[in-house]
Image 1 (tube, rainbow, N blue to C red):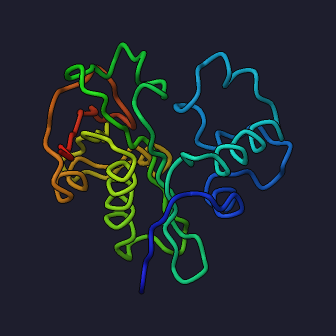
Image 2 (cartoon, rainbow, N blue to C red):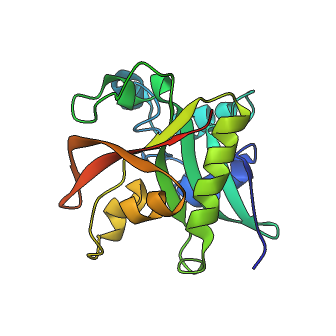
Amino acid sequence: MDIEVRAATDFDGVRALVGPKRPDANVCWCLSHRVTAKENASLHGPERGELVRRMCASERPPGVLAYDGDEPVGWAGVAPRADTQYARSRKIPRVDDLDVWTVWCLRVRPGHRGKGILPRLLDGAVDFAREHGAPAIEGYPVDNRGEKVDLTMAFVGFRSLFERAGFVRAADTDSVSGGFPRVVMRLDLR
C-alpha cells in the first residue's frame, strides 16, 4: 500500500472521512475542537460543511488527508493550538508559552484500519505543522496502556502511537476519553 499524506484541500475527501451521510445532519465535521463553542453551537446542518469547504480552500487547510492512490483513507485535524478549543481548555494544560500546534483528531476509514495508515497520518500532520512554521506540535492521546479503547473515543489517538512518532510526554491532564486518562505529548520541531 502506497500512502500519501497531503494538506486537506480536497473538500470531497474531508467529507468522505468526517462528513455526514445526509448533508442536513449535525455531525461534528471535526469542528467541535476547532472552532469556539459558541460558533460550534450556532452551525446547523449544511452550514457546518460550508465552513469546512471554506477552510479547505483557505491558505491553511483544516488538517491533512491520507490517500491510498486516489482514495482518501485517513484524516488528521491539525492547527495552531491558539485556533482550537484547547487554547481555552481547563483540563488540558498549556506546557509553556510556545505557539504550539495541535493534532486533535485521527481517523482511518473502516476497511483500511490495521494497515499502518495511522503512523503515516501522524507523520503527515507533523510535516504539515512544520511546513507552516510550528515550533512544536502536541497531541492529547489516551494512555490506555495497551487496553482496548472504544473506537468512538479512539479519535484522540494512543500514547504509544505518539511515542513511536518521537513525541514525549510533556504533562498529565485532567481529561479522560473512553475511561482512560489523556496526556500531553509533544514533539519539538525546531
